[in-house]
Structures are given as structure tokens and as C-alpha cells.
Length: 465
Image (cartoon, rainbow, N blue to C red; front, side, top):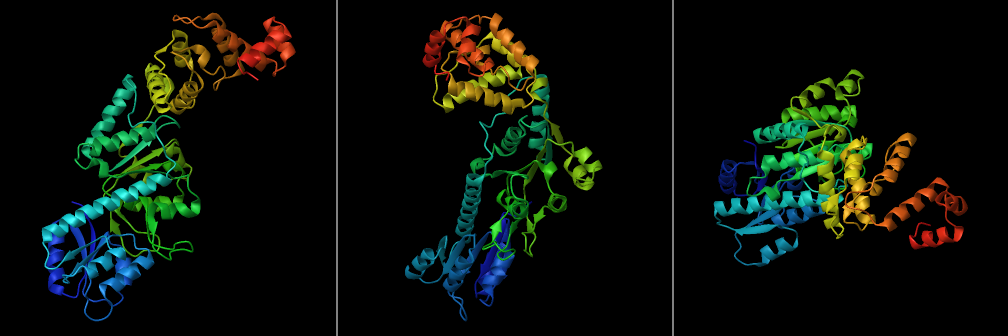
């Protein structure tokens, strides 16, 4: 069973801290003891605790309040609980003003202390995750992986089994836009969703290519103060921030070779050492790696470590492209129409015309679900319609000139079963004429067999130029 956290105890009464240490270890914590203030700040920071129990009156040398102030100046990012035998509130108030998270009067109830620590560490983990997510550029519309095709049902069944079994390392493969990040969130939910404190369980996603090369190591593993020029204070990496939950390493196939070795060590030993640090901290993290690359090919080309490859591929899920998912494209379209209508406070689009369904299913979707999502989002924002028809699908979405021409022909001959407003048809033909003539009004008027003045009137009416 993994430790709940690392607690540093500093008190000149060795009997008290020995007793506290035994109780905390029994409760699942790892402890480190110190009974004097000599080089206390350096020793505390070097051990990198998750919380500190600090006596206010340490006898000789510095007081607990002096050490607290020094820790604040060092930028310590862990909560400090002050211990005091002073019945007056003056010392406690000063401690809280100087950054202490809480204080307890001696003699105190050990069970009460453990409750205080449990809450402090849970709140710290939640705060760390929130702060990280505020900076993260990763976003997702919803957490549900949508699909009912046979290939997706099989995929989700396998993912569910792996999550329930508590698999600690999992690789997701598939082309860009197939939904790897969304599936990762589902796996996280299946793994932890039944816990009463699920909202406190961290889920963190990091893109291995989104950060500059000189920052990615510190982002992954954290760093100690002074490890490099800009390291002004200690910083936790994403492995520590995700402790007790899930970490998604997206685009793992692009990770630099020197970092691959460190990742392998984390996977095998389940410990992490900050850049410039001297302590190996145990972590309990479910690691999901994702890539759109052929890792086996990368191994043969010497760009990816073979030992890391075999470590990651013990449990693998391959996400299929949207073009292989049959009716899922219609199910996803319906879902995105509803979701974006609600998101943008627009009138719901209640149906999809037959011609639109035919086009959606015929298109190859090289950008997969992400491309479909973008098409639907633009439609919801730009159109005020009840029925999603072929004319609302970009005629040239990712296709060749021949496909572009074929889509125009489809528009010209298919009338939606539900009917369509003539103004919509008129507007679309005018738009096509202007596009074909590079907005030359005279040539466009000839194509449409109307006068120049008539075309100018309708172009202004429909705000096409």
C-alpha cells in the first residue's frame, strides 16, 4: 500500500515526536524526525515533505516561528501545522499570519491531528491540480466517449476492464483527432468514479510537445530551488501533482530520448526525483500515454527506447479513425449539435436531413472526430436553422477539386425531405457564383442569369460581400 504522504516532524521533545511518528506511520504516512533547529530549513526543504509539524518553542536556537518565516521566504509549497503548549492565542495568531495552515495546542488528540493532516493534504492536492489546469491549454467538450459501432463497443469494453483492474500503465494509440484524451478521461472515471472523494482525485494531462525543450523536464519531474537559473523556489512536477490519480502523457512518441530514460525509471520504480533534488519520492499514479505515431517504427529508427516501448505496450488500446466507425458519425453529429447549441445558447437543431447524413457518411474525415466537431461548431454558431442539411456542410471540406465538384452537384439535385426555404437556396447559389468568379459581380450575374443591379441587391440583402 502506498504512503498517504510525507510528514516532517520538528520538536525538541523526542518522546512526543517519536509517539507522533508511530501513529502517523500506522495511519499510512511516511515520517522524518528532527529534534533541534540546527540547519532545520535546509533539512526540511531537502526532504521535500507534503506537510510539516513544527513546534513553536524549540528550546535553544531558532524558534518555530523563525523557521516558519524562513520557509515562507524560501517559497515552501507545503502546509505547516504549528504545535504549541501556549494557552494564549498570541503565538497562534502570529503563526497563522506568517503562513501556517493550522495550529494545535499541546496536549492534543492524535486522531484529531491525523484528521487535520488528511484534510490539509487533500486540499493541497486539489489546489495544485486546479492551479495546473488553469494554465493548461488542454480542453475537451464533455467527458463521455460517444459511439455505438461494434468496433467502439469492443474498445470501450477493453478500456473498462483495464480501468477496473487498476492497470497502472496504459498506452493509447490512434490518428490525431480520434479521441484519445476523451477516452483517457473515461478511463480515469471508471478507475476512481465510485470513490466518495472522486472530485478530489487528480486528473492531469500534459502534452509532451507543447512545452519548450528546456522546460519539459521541470514540468514533468519538478525542480528544487536553485536547480537552474530561473528556479526561484521548489516546484512540484506533474507526477507529484497527479499522485493518487491519473496522469495523461499526450504525444509520448515525441518525447526526447534523454527524458524517455527518466520516464522508464518512474514507470518501473514508481518514484520521482525533482531536477536538482536528492530525494526519491514514492508516487501512486496511473499513467496513460498517448501517441499518433507508430512507436514500433520509431524504435527501429532509433527515436524511441525499446525498453520503454515494451514497458508501455503491456496494455494498449488503438482508437479507430472515424471513417471506420459506421453510423457513429451521425451519432456524434447529433451529440455535437446538442452540445454546441447549449454551449452557445443557440436554438436547438432538431434534425439532420437525409442528404446531410449521406454526405457525412461518405466523407473520409481525415481529421477524424476533431474535424467533425469543428464543422458542427461552425454551423451551430453561424446558422439559425431547425434542420441540418447538406448545404450547411462545407462543400470543400478536405476534399479534392473533383470531390468539391461532386458536392456541388449533390446540392443542385437533392431537395431535403423536410423541405427548405427558397431564400436559403438563393443565398447558396449566389455565394457559389461569387466564389467561382472571385467576387466579380458582372460575371456572377451572367452565371445566375440576372441583371447586375438584381445581383447587387441580393448580395447586399444576404450580406455576402
